[in-house]
Length: 488
Ligand code: G6P
Image (tube, rainbow, N blue to C red; front, top):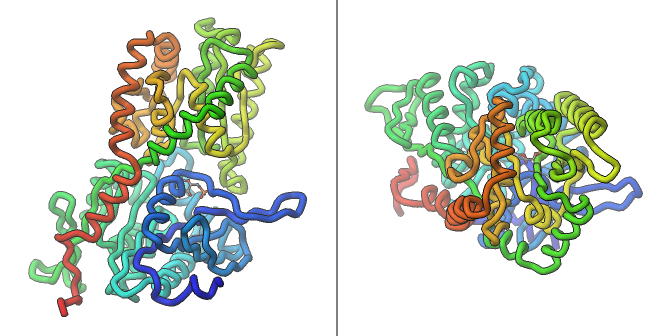
């Protein structure tokens, strides 16, 4: 029964993230159930956790509900409750209306509210307490993402025996932007409670180290930060070595390829093509409906190509999947209105009775439907203005075992550090983006194959299992000196 799942100090491996891998959902017709969560984090960590027999601590996605621990797909799930006001102040407020826009280079203006910060501290403490309670002696606790940056320090204070990792799934901004945060010192201190702090890009790790030097004056050498154990910052103070470096996240590449090879999925891809009126070229965008994703820039470029007659709706259809996200946050509501206005205009101006310009879908879809879409897409457009990694780009590549398809990829997505054979774009440069789209649409088969082969090698060789193994090896490996713990 559920009591067995929540034995104190029972787990050697714990993941702590804001969201659990499953969300609790109440349908309009009154039916209830657990549904897979949105976003890249879950996709990345679920296979790791299943293998480790660990516990996952997180929020069930609804306010004012308490759930007993339970087992899901071989993972022990320990839900942490949030009240309605905490959902507003900690999740929608501080996490998604302060940190999210700030860490994504202020594409949207961040709001700073002291009550939101107070809720962030309170909720971080609750997550830390749940982890401290579930962790066995000397356990590995891996804390995830910007919603929980204070948890490493809080955990270290209550449980110095633990090995604590933190991974930031989103960008870490340059100091000039980061320093706007009124609680900039507290957040750095929270993170420095970890033994290893992982980032998506080398540049993110560099930005973090710089912030540590500017705000605390601690010494950094390469990827190591010397954090004084005592309060004094003198050269002979005891130091704890914290590693801050890049671990670019990935996907279950073989799993995606396997699904893409299934005959039903391929039949579905053909059916999608058919239902769009068999256009010569299908261009695809797949994103959470988020202002960081550059959906407007993409539509602007596409609309101008139709206007200028460089593309025609008889030949080319843009399919845009925009999965609903953070719908009560005002910036997201505005974005949805703007995008849907744009889609309506473009279709009004350019569609014919037989051919849409944009097929716009405001839905999330199950994995197999996404894979069918990737197979149907001749061109994949990833035009993020800022993105930690962007796993959609990697998913597309993993699915294209036919070595066909063209990836157009923003250089502001972390994935562009690795996927150099994509058609790289600066999405702010609308002329450049238009040329890149046309280049992708017209690219000869040999060139498509050459690029896709190289991209696939990269993604298949660097999958999520390798990512987590590399992080956990660094975390548990030699070189980390744990103060206060002496060998027995
Ligand atoms: C990004 C973040 C995740 C987050 C996901 C979905 O991938 O890095 O931490 O879970 O977006 O956003 P949501 O607010 O719905 O959890």
